[in-house]
Image (cartoon, rainbow over all chains, first blue to last red; front, side, top):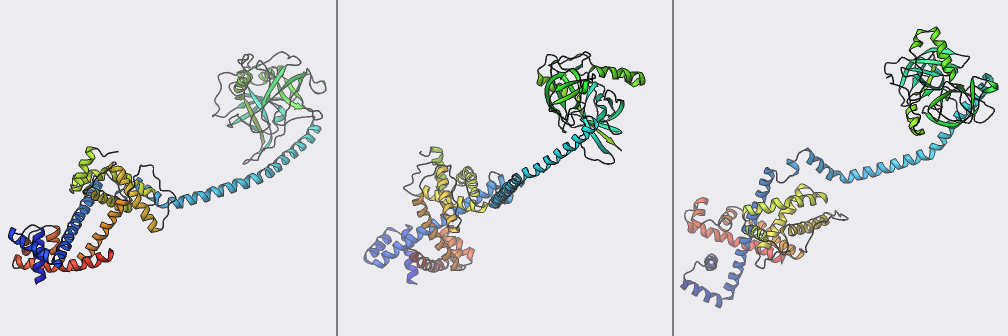
Amino acid sequence: MDDILLLEAIERYLNNDMSVEERTYFENLRKNTPEIDQMVVEHNMFLHQMDMYSAHRNLRHGIHDAHQRLLERGDINEGAELTTRGRVIQLWHKYKRVTAIAAGVGGIIALFISGMVMYFAPAVNGNQLQQLSNDIAAIKKKQQVQGNLINEVKSKLPEGVRFVSGGSGFLIDPKGFIITNAHVLKGSGAIVVNSKGQEFNADIVHIDQEKDLAILKVTDKEFIPRKSLPYGIRKTSSDLGEEIYTLGYPRSEIVYGMGYLSARSGFDGDSLSYQLQMSANPGNSGAPVLNNNGEIIGVLSTRQSSAEGVVFAVKSRNIFRMVDAFRKTDTAAEKIKLPTKSNIRSAQRKQQIAEVEDCVFYVKAFAK
Amino acid sequence: MKADSNEQALLKGLANNDSRAIETIYKENFNTIQAFILNNNGSYDDARDIFQEAMIALYEKAQSESFVLTCQIKTYVYSICRRLWLKRLQQLGKYTNQVDSLEETIPVEEDLDNHEKRNAAFAIMDRAMNSLGEPCKSLLEGYYLKKLGMQELASEFGYTNADNAKNQKYKCLMRLKKLFFAQYNIGE
């Protein structure tokens, strides 16, 4: 009980609730009794501690309330209230490390695989190259038997039909008349493929075995007829030494080759052909031979197997003759209007090629 | 950089537990801290804890008589949070090789030491309060924290008169002091 009274007195003293008399009395008591003095100091400190504790608690509440208010107003964002985007970010933070590890492992595997591919790729290519050269060897044998024809390009066998040969061809009329070698068209039908890889159905409308030329008509609805052709077809003979070039499909992609006119006659004095000095491969058959002016002077047809780079081209004037003959047998031929004037005469070679390229087709002949 | 007058006003408001000042400081700084914590292995809860701790440290700083804030509030809060978070990460045994710090920081170790001492004292007080039991706890809270009058408390708790309530209060206070100092002096 005394302790409580004392405590009350101390508190009143600290709160300045004492009258002057009482205060003087109490201060004397403090001076004379160290125990009481100690209690006063201790209680003062404790009250101070209580005040701080109180302020601290109020502050925590205040901060917590501020947090809730800001959260409600959307000034700050937290997991629970977040939109999907925020959740993604949260997930990202959560799984950042896992993701990094996964990505690292993925990267290592990718490197490993590409390393394996690099290691094995040349061997595989080697086989393919080997196979291809075998084919060429087979072709060579055949060519010797058949009289130096360049024609064979083995094709895959799609549904129902069997591709028997392939070569090149080019437009002689913007409406879709294509000229190629007769020996290219060994089967019963053909399709043509442009330099962009689009395929079109075509009919064989005329074949002249003697001149080794044939005409195809593109019948596909997807084919958009051109307004005009960039090149002209030369009626007269060309000169010895004239620089010439060709665009053809020895492979499924268009290939450019160049050379010069080396003789006015073809193999064994064949007056229908020129002899050219250039490299040509199976598949080049039917490709146009152009001069610097962008005029077609011939249709590439055969090569001499016993000599390197000796190639023969059917002279362009035979195209006129054949179309004339065709007109006599078929009224459809009346539509054919052969271009005689080159529109790319003054153009650079690269520009000429860009123009001509669109008119040269890959011809695939098939048998049912 | 000296804190400008606007910031001084904010700090004064914070020292007086003014809710608008608290809200302004909160709004201006929270997102930066949250981003910092989230970018360094922390969660939303961590960000809230750390930031609120920093607010309290700032409040203590603003209250102290020798109060001089020699930098912007932003820098001070960031420095505190960074220090606190590094410490927390260390305690959790999560070491981050490099906590990103593009922000300017100031040394806050001394302030944090004081802050932690205070926190320890508050924790002791908290425990002492909670082990008192009712009605002692509520009575003392009513008188010393909510600053209610004795008459008010007497009627609220159902004492016949204020003197009885006062008597009871002192008994409770003595028990609390005992509990508190028992812990507090060990802590010292």
